Image (cartoon, rainbow, N blue to C red; front, side, top):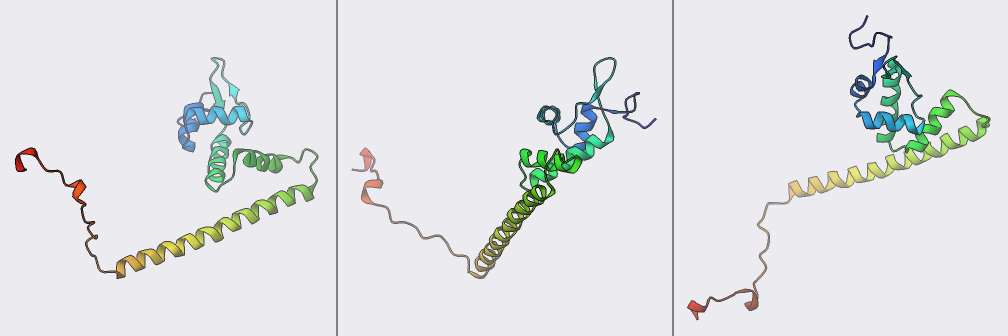
Length: 148
């Protein structure tokens, strides 16, 4: 038997969460949202997951980092597993729309990167100087009663 596996052949919730880099609350939230199937349970009531649950959690987190919402992730997972009466053209249309959105983000990020590089180059070429001091107004200078 592999280390870390439950005697039933699965992984406990804590093991899955740690392996996927999420916390237990995230794991349970994804179950409630239907992103993860409800796991089997041991006689003692402990959740037991398959190794595929770790992979699925990693896919979900990666999709989120790429800008997908959980609702979009759920749709993608549903589309990947079965179509539920959706026409292939509808699935293709949604995928094309998301691709266009991702490509626009890449364009925007490329512009931001170029702007930041230019700012860094400009700052490096500019000699370091002290910031200009603002003159103080007479009101801001307080005199102590002893100096009057």
